[in-house]
Image (cartoon, rainbow, N blue to C red; front, side, top):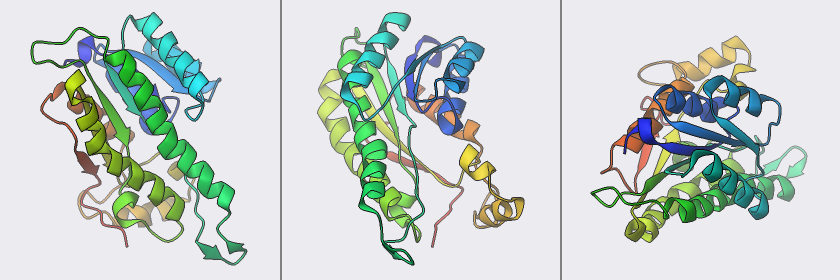
Length: 251
């Protein structure tokens, strides 16, 4: 596969890692459809990159089905699905205000894990319709986990559980879809300069950066986008999780 002939759906494409991925793909000739809940920023980003946008709730089957059909109609096909939509709470299992709210835990799992699976499974149906390349390839699904899946910190119990689930489903999903020529990969980012982190005080950002062994800085979302692009073009990558974290091990 080549980025120049890729037709990608990208969830969470209106900001952060998803936006960076959408921009990188488009800059390299790919068709892009952004799936996001942000009905203001989403269309603006799509217009800038010459792509498409559809407001989407990744947890809702009807919403995602409509988005996949829209994307396929606009681009003529779907060959790549990149799942970047997600949320994060900072709540301990038991804190000063009592136990972790169950609704916050459920919402995190629903958006991060169930939402990722929902989009992946429905995108896979559409990708499987493509004519195979000479090596049998029809497309690729790239999901977003986190280093929190492996060494989650205090207050990350819901987030780490959701991202651990994404790591856990990578290999079996790759095996499930192997016969259709669809690869499945997962990227586990470390601490990246997303809108959420950009709102933190500069001294906090610096402290976070100092925890990264090398290079001692926060990740740039464009680095995630380039990694996703590399996965698209490197057809022998399948069923694996790539940590993109500067050797960070959180404690």
